[in-house]
Length: 345
Length: 83
Image 1 (tube, chains in turn red, brown):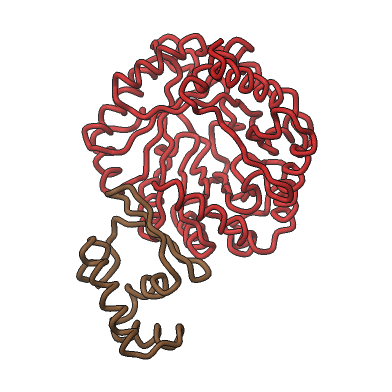
Image 2: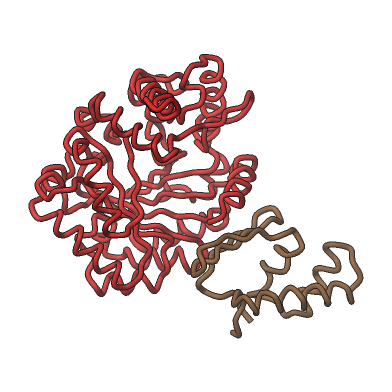
């Protein structure tokens, strides 16, 4: 997609508080048990059914959403997953599917191809089966992932691999890059693990080591891909409460995929349309995005130009406006790598 | 005529964007183009032109020419198809 058109769209959406992107978590159910998973459980108490998701999708259309991401749990375990995807497409929105790949048979890949997703994204947790399977706590999951990828390739479905980096797989970073290059599949890396959605910090014990972060940012520096935020006085840190929203499997709505401190309400009680337009929680969250921008600029240092997630900071320290030690450590590692690449050291 | 099913699009506050999924690119729509686009599925060419003339305060013959020209471009690109 054109970067300029995307930036223009994002800027207009920020001004209008138009939720351009929505994350729909179809289910907590999953057939894998990734050790750092942010979901609070692996079963649903009372998940939304196909009709309820269709009502959500109708309201998203009316609110101005263009891009929908479907995730879980493992979204393909939802019995009406394809109906939900078809509803998104029939309302002329794009969708992206996050799946572990284990349920992607040839038939599933063919049906996905017909719906034209922007991308199907799957996680690669290691270059070697033992590393991947240890991370997912599911024997055979590495092979299952690659069977799914192969089926998607056969049906020409746009596919992206991505790795949440952890201290379990950080030593295989270069091998994973080489593997995905060999397979010719676009590849993204993510260094940030988060608390579980219920606030449990358990996943953070798997965060990369200091050496892992250094290796990761050195790789990004070599590729000129170190993330940067261009903050301006009076601007906003991110789309929190303005351009993004999330709906969990049981219908609770949040002002961005990460922000779980407070919900706008539940779509079973109030239409999404009204929740978005009238919720004080959304307005408070949007205000956090303003305050974080100004606080980071005032503090200066590497965080002034490094991406910051208020929701993650909120989970870590209870303060969504100022950088927490982990954000700072990442920003410093990125800065060192940037300088190292510039000076050839 | 109708909008091709392999596109995504959105029009908000008179501004629009089309995502061409097969070609993997995005196109912006000017306010008058967004006006025409958002009526393709529900109105005839003549109705769209009459509405455009009223909404943008232009004479009807110019509106008809604009709508015809824009729809022709959209057909060429495969963005609208016969219903």
